[in-house]
Image: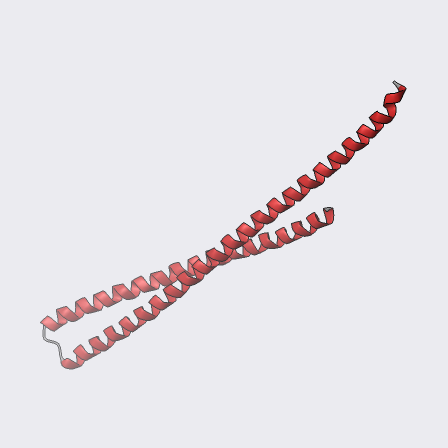
Length: 146
């Protein structure tokens, strides 16, 4: 039984190590997501500024060449924003996966700890029962001499 507990405690240590590794991955993913979110916001701001500038210039009668250049730039910005949305979605999916893995490991670790505690209680119960039996036997052997 003690050997089982030892093996289970080693397994619990492995689970705790994996749990800590996942926590670091979650934190790193969160930092990357925040960086990518900043890029996304910057691209959106740039797009709105460019559209605003185009509207202002269009009122002042710009050449068709300049207008086409603005339109091409706006198209490129919209494309970059869509790509950035994909990056953000991928980070979000990865974050959800990491959280699910973390929760699973946490449950496994808690269940394993509960199993270890139950085995230890059982061992203690058997030791106490054995000790009580020995004490009863000693008492019964001494009883005739009283």
